[in-house]
Image (cartoon, rainbow, N blue to C red; front, side):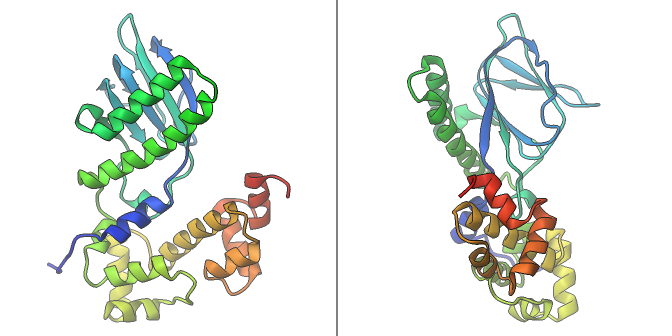
Length: 280
């Protein structure tokens, strides 16, 4: 058995760095089964303040959730929600943007949090439903900001309650792989190769590649590319030029960066930036 150490606070910060964003698509009292199928193309966050919610998934028994609770489905997962009983449930639902590594490697496919045991989440839930009920000026913007804060608080709660599992958490507890991941996260602009990564781990090239892939479920260079793409999206969304984003993300040329970004994001960097920020 290999020696291990717990993940650092700095790594947990990196885990939250590329958290997805949430956008509300339903708020109100739901009686009976929702007319639409959720989770076909995006993850979902369901916030329940009153009643009993049934989550229906294909070929599975309904999942019963009692208020007050948060239900997180971070990746696309076909489901319908149902407000049980004649009075239904008070519910908010939000769609999530894509979740990327390293968070996507450790977060469960479905999580239910009873917020009676999570004081911060309970306060956020109460505040959001209060905003929705009062519908004061700016309530939509307030709920949007609170949703994003809630999503981060959910992930923080999962970390604090040890409900994240496997993958990159195991790698960060591995004394051979941890120095490599810390270096990739903090210095993605370097010209990394399998050889330079292996040197950080004090393992041979083949032993390092095998160990990394077994523990994380991704090859080293694939993980590095995913991290660089997360960083590039963050830089582009901040308004930086494509060339600057390419350099900071570790690409020697705009052409190679454009090819990698298009493969990962479905659009060239400049086009993706225009879609996010609008014409400039």
